[in-house]
Length: 226
Image (cartoon, rainbow, N blue to C red; front, side, top):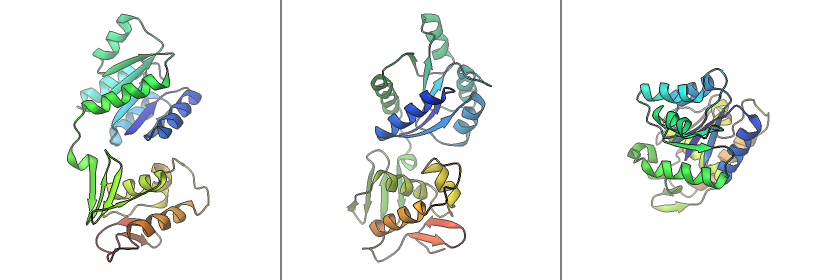
């Protein structure tokens, strides 16, 4: 699942991001309500984890705004306020679940996965295909010509992002931000190394290459060479 964590406590947010990734999910972070709202409006997430008390824009306002815009992304609200009235306010604001702090990560994970099972995603959101290359986001299974391709987690995230943007040039900056969560260029060849490994797995033994390098611009997944 692709998740967005809106949490102003940096240590808590980073712990959640690391733990969610180790559990097989992707997690983006926002440190305040305004940033979180903008990220939720500008990208597709499987679920949101929203702290109730946030700077700039509180969590309930974030959720109410999204619901007013017909954004139905499942939301788990986190809060130190655990009275019945507080939980009711959170659910009536548009939250799908409410978890009181302190909490066990295992419970948070179980609740998030339960929210994910409630949603029946559209086909194009769970399955990407370019030619005979198919990526199933639900099973994390990648095949080409019916042949299963085993990818490492980072290779999978790289391919998923490229296929989500199939036919479009994906720049190094885009990959650093969305696959590596870097908001700066580390001045390393990490992207080139992973692209090379990915290309060897999805193209090397097949007649038609799908992963293309667009010189001076970035990379592209396409049946046609750019």
